[in-house]
Image (cartoon, rainbow, N blue to C red):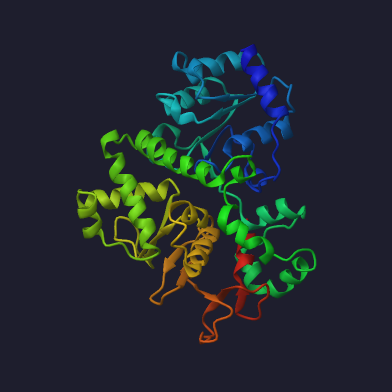
Length: 394
């Protein structure tokens, strides 16, 4: 146990959380069992250590961070370890990559039942279905999602500002006033291209090649998150990777399921399941017409975020595709996004019609019932809003 405390102290002291994530204030920390899901690379480990640092400091033994990657836990269950920690006065156990432990959900349930004054905060993959696939956690776990950096968080990091987030309704109603508060302090477009290229994943701050690091992360998403958690045999990995690559090359459009099935030599139903797994792992986003959802055929499949586009096929990068990808990624966290019947147009929360368009395009015919999220501009007016401002939703 002392070795774990030494590791905990070192990690907390050396945790350099350059941006305080907004999720820290959205979580109800009074819950005894809290699950934080998110794709690889978005900073879940840093988030746990940041919580420990803020609430307890590095040397308070009431809080302990552990990682299920440690081989020690191949011979000892979570509940057994938690019991020893609890008897030593432990109050908060932070468990990273909980899915690496066999029978992890049953172990967490035992902790909840046997140690009533112990709080557990754990991280897991975005692929995990905490309640649907683990009924023993129903009613006891509060689940949250940690996303990659928003454009707001990236801008704050790069400029030293402390811009606050806004709701979609605030942006739609007051975007002209909001931009007047931001533009005197910073020019967002000077940083927007960098965010689109490499700003979503916090590891761009590390002294490593970003593209290579992202490719490695993407491979881990398929090799570990999808195969391990969904219990898919290794021999099918190449089919999933090829499907992902074909979807990336196709750009944001409706997938031809029959052709994809032939290309990867499998059934249409399997292709649809693989597409769902890729969406769950936050590698792609799938967009449906209003009123439809999986297992219906998507109206559009696109990359989850623009950084992925550059990592997969940087030669084939179209600005309109990048901007639509940014739009969907900025809104999906809190809003329902559906496909409209016009190109470049989306329905948000079944009531707002958005069109993503170039502010420099003189051919755009304006309509009163549409909100125009325009790129290549820093300002907006009336129903024309600057696209970058939607990066301030979290």
